[in-house]
Image 1 (cartoon, one colour):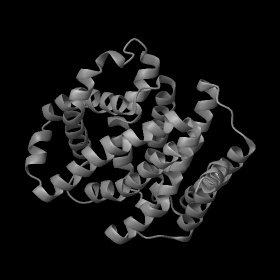
Image 2 (cartoon, rainbow, N blue to C red):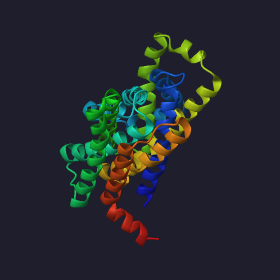
Image 3 (cartoon, rainbow, N blue to C red):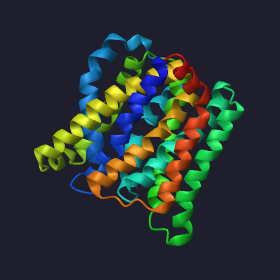
Length: 293
């Protein structure tokens, strides 16, 4: 139950992350600015953790460590940021968490030797139907958002690689989050500042900086990442990731309330499918939770 609760807590935060990020990239901030705020703050907060637990990081295992650091790092943030400048919150919510489950299931089987039962396969199939519905609408009806969809799908694959690497390395959640935040800050921020990013941030309103800095750098990059890493450790990569499609409904609602993002029939069908897929995949976990009170 602890792992399942941690996954739900992370999902609730990420439900808000999509519209908050979209708010930034359709108003005053670039995706590059949002990434800088996220990792500068998260890196500063978690740097003491990494210094204390430096030896726990398997630095000599780059084939596993790089997917961990990049999968939840700057590449992931930039892919979703640029994708959200094109696609709205509901579309991104369906394609992001929905496809993460499918990618993780495949990666976990290929690289971790995990097995998927019939219920998990059925749930993933239902999720893919919802994803196909959202993509199909634009594929046959104008293609206005397909570029954004491609970026979000790539971001989903990036997060899936992080999920599977987390399972393989089995780092403690706080150490996991510290490694991601600090390494990305050390690599990205010098490049960002050298390209004039500091002047860009200095010209932005303080309210925008505070909102994005706290939500991106503390709530999302630290608290939610720790919760999700804990869930992966307790539940396994495939089950932990399959919980994440619960976030699309909330993300779509927040996007509609905060940004006025349009919710069309294809998005509604996609939301219903991915939510149904989650229920099917986690049927046993839900039964156990209910039985346990």
